Image 1 (cartoon, helix red, strand yellow):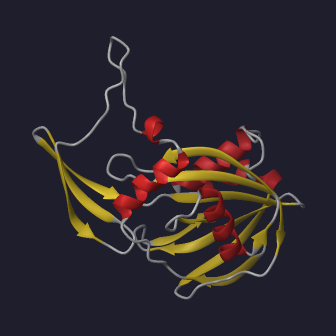
Image 2 (cartoon, helix red, strand yellow):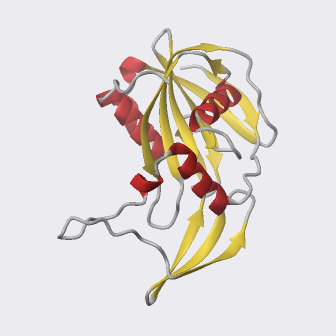
Length: 217
């Protein structure tokens, strides 16, 4: 296992609420991801709050207070994100270890990042992988789209597989330390217990048990 120290910074994401909705429209998935349980007669009940107002406007996310009948919910608006399972020509997976203040520890994760304004998920995934690891090229597939924490957050995660990637110059940013960690593909199943990050578990388990998928992007 080889490790390399790199630095990267946090980027300003803008208005999380409007960017989330614009992102859903661009991807053509609004009608899918906003559906809820069908009633007994087979119709789909769409969910929309009675009232909604922004109570926090942050660099990366906004928080809205929504009223649903007699209940109130605090909802984190997020612009959407990507994660990449990257495998090089030698069958090595590249992950990143980084400090996560909310978890109070360093976590081992897939290369990942937040969508910028007007950016497609695929372009974001390619950019983030190169910025964090220096890896480029390869054959890309989008394997899953899922909510990370739907109990309170609207973050929609796009999972990509990138196979046959090659090393190249990285473009690190300033204020976040990353350690690159390489795993042999053959060791993946035996090392899953080292992972505590949800998107990384989803990505690696999907890759391990269902590596196929749609045509390359």
